[in-house]
Each structure stands twice: as structure tokens, then as C-alpha cells.
Length: 421
Image (cartoon, rainbow, N blue to C red; front, side):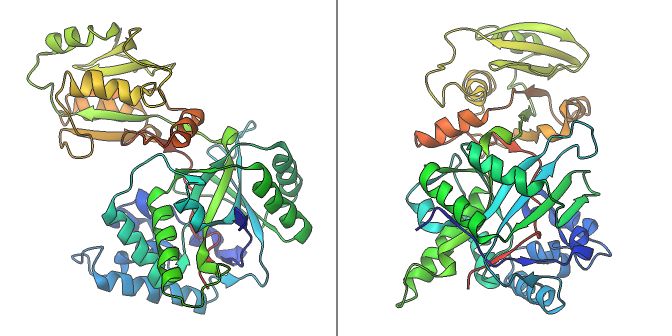
């Protein structure tokens, strides 16, 4: 099987795409989703977070919510808000966080289907653990819609010829081109309908891309692959060519992706005074008082901490980390082992209620705010991981610590949908 394949996508008409395309299901809670699509019947949030059309007191995993999902999804198709392409195609999806700037940076991904067996066989590589409850939620969503309503965010090692093909296509006017009002991010979309171009891209991926890496969407990847396996096992006439053998992805070259910091805030100092806490940090770090102005780490193994109105720069001392170990080199590992565990007594980042995580998209001012208002006692800012670190971890079969990567911008949902039959 090919590592990617074209598909007959369901897409919105141009005149409603901006209203229909939505942020991913997992970046909004139910109440935020209700507010975001208030007065907008076109928003795909009615499909991806259908609890917004159910009584507020209803649990988002109630069986009635999933029935609402399929009801809304079918209505979108019946109303002509999602229209199926007549032939299999590939697509290009471009994003920018600063689309109106003269030096705007865009990242260009190929929208294609990936082979579910490649997830099982680890040709599609992951760097995070998944939770069974979240997997099952997304599996129910895929089962009831019989579709990949939202894409998964993949990366691949950049290849010059693919860049050339993409550049030629994106020099033309996009089918969709809009700036999302919620965050100001730009989104552009092209349809690749030339069969020779599609065949060449499929061939390049087959022969020159040894693996694809999940950047964002581990639960969606697992859910899509598992549903594919279910359908295979339940089909006595299975041939391997059925559409359910594939799931929808947007695949970006690794050198275009933007990873931002993922920071930590902690509710207390584990019984220590500020002075005792800072003294404890001195064992593994060179600590420098940077004053009251926000200080952002500028390099690997440099951190900043905010406590009692002051920012402190922390440089990890030689010997406290292992640059030859794909896990040991990570700043999240250094901070977890030498500060969160050893000093603050936080053993399990997944379950300890004393710690919270703040995506860098909110800025370090959010860390300061949460400490200043008394909600938290101390904050830690980290230097972002690199795409190469993610690849090294995935290639060695390792798993990153929780809350390590934050990719931005997020993929918009609804520009194209893949059905499993």
C-alpha cells in the first residue's frame, strides 16, 4: 500500500467556508464552543462538539450527544454545506500566524490519506502516550459519522522536489483564503486535481519518505487506526483497498513547523520558604535574579522561574543532563527530575493536582498573572523543544513526558472531510 493516497473530500462552498471552518474539538471546552458558534449554524463545532446542541446539563459523552453528532453531520451534507468531490484528489493547506505581515511565514501541508496499518506498524510514529477514554471518545465519533471529520497533524522530513511542486501550485489563487476572526490566523487551501501531479507526489512519498511523525492529534490517529482495524475484522470480504483502511492527515515538511514553549505553574513550594526554594535550585542550576521584568529563556537548558514578584534565570549545570539521550536532553526532563520531583515533590505530572500546564501561545504574562493572583505560587518557563528532538524520540521508540509540545497554529477543521466508504 502507498504511504499516502488521494481521496474524494467533502468540502464547503467558498461562500460559507469561513463560517464553517472551526478550531479543533480539543482546544475549546463545551461552554467556549457554545459562545464561539453562537448565531452561526454553519460552524463545524455543531458536529465536532455536538453537546452544544444538547441540554447544558448533559455530559459531553452521553449517548445522546453522539446521536446529535450524526444528526448534525448528515444535515450539513443535506443542506449542501459539505459537497463531495467527484474524483480523488490531494489538497494543500497553508497556515500563517501573521498573515497580513510583509514577512508573513506560511507553512504548507499536503492533505492526504494515510494508511492505518502504517500506524500499527510504526511507519507513522508517535511521541506521546494516549489515554483510553479519549481514544474511545474519538472512536465513537468516527464510527457514528463514518468519517474523519477532523484531520491529524503530521510531519515528514522535508524533500526539495515536494517543495517545488507545492510552490508551483500555491503560486496560483487558492480555493479558500481567509483570516479567522477568533485568533487572526490565516488559512489558504488549494485542490490538486492534476492526476500526473498526484501520482508524482504519491510516488515521492512511497520512495523517499521513510516515516511520518504525528505532530498533533495522537488520540485522533489512534482512534482512526483502531476503527479501521475494527472494520477490517468485521468485513469477511476485506481486500485492503477499502476507504476505511485510511485516515485523513495534513502532512507538513518538518522544517516549516513552529513549536512553542509549554510551561508549568505549581500551587505551592512544598513547605519551603522562597529562600529555601532558591537555595535548593542552586544545587543543579546557576540561578540569577533578573528582576521584575518578564524573562524568557533563550536557549536549550535555560529556564526561567517566577516567584514572589521576581523572575530568575536558571541555567542547568554541566552533568545534570545527558545530551546523548533523546529523553535526557529534554528540558522538560531536566525540570521534572531536578525541580518538580526533587524539590517540589511532584512525582506524576499526569495525576498531581498541584501542577498545571500553560501553552506558550498565552505568553509568559499568563504565568505571572496566575502567580500574582495567588492561584499559583511559582511558575516555570521552558525553551521549546525542536522538531529534531521529536523525531529522535519517535525514531528510538521513546515517549515524551506529558505536556511537552505545543504546535501553533492548530489545523482548522472543516476545510475537507474524509468519509470511510
